[in-house]
Length: 66
Ligand SMILES: [Zn+2]
Image 1: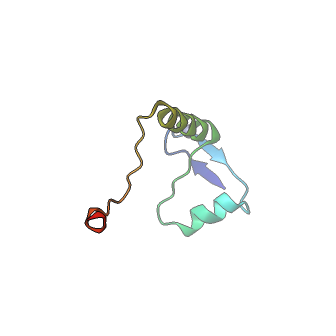
Image 2 (image 1 turned 90 degrees about the vertical axis):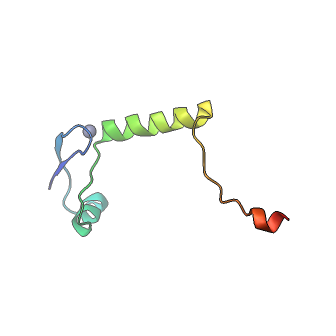
């Protein structure tokens, strides 16, 4: 099965029976990321978390604090 990376447009072929192939077939929007793009993005995300610029939004229940 041929898949195209959404980031760099690289075409890769993956095993038709692999879990990722099944996932892509079940989804109307086919989003596939190649391994190198996937690694790059997770690296960046980790860097952001470590540098403290990445904020997780917490739902604030101010009313309950009264
Ligand atoms: Zn890619």
